[in-house]
Image (cartoon, rainbow, N blue to C red; front, side, top):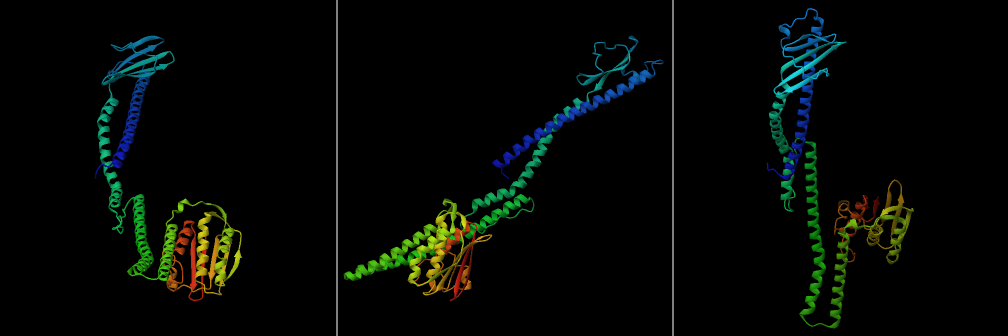
Length: 424
């Protein structure tokens, strides 16, 4: 495995923490070991002093005490003193250990009233120094061993991450069907792999939608362009009368208008919704504005609009986007409802906000209901020149509604009615 920057950083941090931990451990080990040894020496010397005190009357410097230098005071007089007894030691301290290089010397002063027994033990092996020497060798070795195993563990932990990175580098529009294998261990890495695979799945679905969208756009734009080119070609083949040219120009102007409508719808469809101007708005006021806009079209087809449930409803959102939702749904109801029929509109709030448009129009087949919110899709009966529109309205509505975490519920019966309900 390569030493990438992430791995180096982890090893450096781990090494630094490891050195600090081992240093603290070594320091505490030496400190407590040293304390333990001094306490042990002190206890031994205390027992020797008690023994001497108990046998003071019959005291003799026998073999048992040959490893000690003894000085005994009684009534402020020296009653016993070992040969070569060192008087230069500070006897004011009860117990002290003096470092003499590789050896130690311990001094213990035992007092009982005015009586005093002073013991000096020489040539004590300095076990603490031996421990320090051992740790001086073992600590670096331990750090190297732990870093080695840490490197192995980091390799194992980072392997799925590196695989994810390598796979991400290879992902293109052509191989969005590839997925990352799920690690058997490490829940976090399993979640990472699952999240990555979900992302790839969404990208794949998005790419398919874009491909389908591009195909639909191409088809929709090609039709008016073909008509325009055909009219121009026919007009240029030979000289014609003024009425023919006027009629051709009208057809061309018509198709250019259609192109403009398609382009405007596409611009709205791909508009970045993050630029919305959200604020508290009155939905009932927005709906009244929309209904006022379509009064003329309702009269043209002699359609009766019934407001069944109408309440004052407050909503936090972009007024223009909500206007698009209401406008598209009511326009569709007018567009696909025959003359002399009825349209029903409701706006109310319970635990959710409900906006409902129901018409007595041509209806939608069950198999088509799930498709009508796709871009450029229109039900078969509406695919004729008499019905304006390019199948973008409901797609735009769906995107806006979903942006506000809402949903669209569509129910319909062919040649009877269609009900569209928006729930926020």
